[in-house]
Image (cartoon, rainbow, N blue to C red; front, side):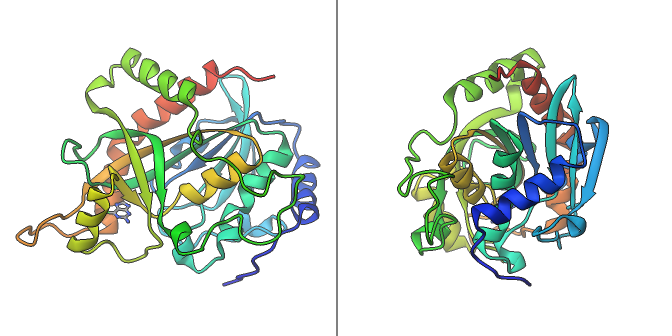
Length: 287
Ligand code: 6GU
């Protein structure tokens, strides 16, 4: 895979301008769909879609369950752009490459980024099928120096040392709770801290116990790097995890994490998760 790790402002601008020349949609909301959660993209009206392989500078999705299309369109009249399939560290791409689409969002005019993912539940009160509103994250690759903002900083995107204590927009979290209640999702709508690991191997029992002790409620392999890049360039962020499996926390368990389980649960709850996000899109105010 391509591991080019520096994309200049001009690289991003070239990609954004290439896209803007081919669609009249001027999205205010950018959505990133997680594993098995790409159905949201299908809800867009008057679609203009691009395969990742046709977009200049774009990586390609290599994971089963991820389609690999950038879809422009409207959700109940609101202009949106949606990544149907995202990029992960474990695919071998640099962290700058997996977060490139977020900067493209910014240059397309996006003001609010909404992300979804499939995650394993660490919080013992969570059940498979719960939807977790992400209120904060633990960025484990960042602890090891793998941060998407490593390298020269371009002030046209943001400051050298961006604040992350307010990464997840409080108002949007509250809106999700309210909308979720209205839709009758109260029983399975939770909130918590998302922990990202590099993957692709799932956690050992010792690792899962450690993450739980550190304050993580769910664990996955995405989202936090994208959130960092989105906050760096001043976009509002909202993110949801679908709890697709309970992480194995003891040595007696006969459960084993597997990708098929992740995709199956995704299918069952996906529609409700998609309705939550699309309803929120119609309520978000933009300048
Ligand atoms: Cl159990 N772990 C990780 N790291 N990612 C996941 C997952 C588990 N379930 C879905 N995605």
